[in-house]
Amino acid sequence: MGSVNIEEGGPTLPDSAETRLAKQEITEVLYRYCHAVDRMDAELGSKIWHPDGLAHYEGIFEGTGHAFMDWCLEGMAHMDGVSHQLTNVLIAVDGETASSESYVHACERTGGNDIIVYGRYSDIWSRRACEWRIDSRRYRHDVVSVRPVGEFPPTGGQT
Image (cartoon, rainbow, N blue to C red; front, side, top):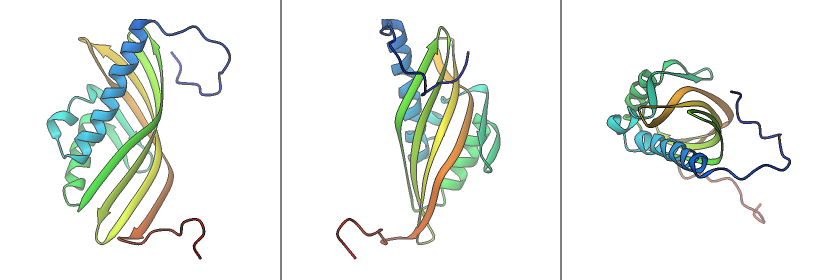
């Protein structure tokens, strides 16, 4: 099975009820990942990847998904605040496997600065024991900026 191809286009048949349900279940796991990180919830975070699932975070982390969650929660515990959101979620389901791409926007407040990150998750999924979880995630940075807390970029009309 290939990954989600956003270039495909063209007419397609409507998804079956089973496929729509799989897409909703996968979307909810994606959202639970954000909740687990923002709430420092290790138990919830342990339900994102399969035990043998891998996490490839460009220039940041390489290892298992469970080890990533441990590493991530340990690092975030020292921050003043964190917030993660996902958008533009595309999912392709093929039976008991799937692929997805989603955009992530995160803000991490630490040391008087807001670290603002935009990136993409490309995930490979499988359904085992009636649960969708990640087999492999690739994260890619698109934009990273660091701003002092309270500093906002100019908005339209301001000089």
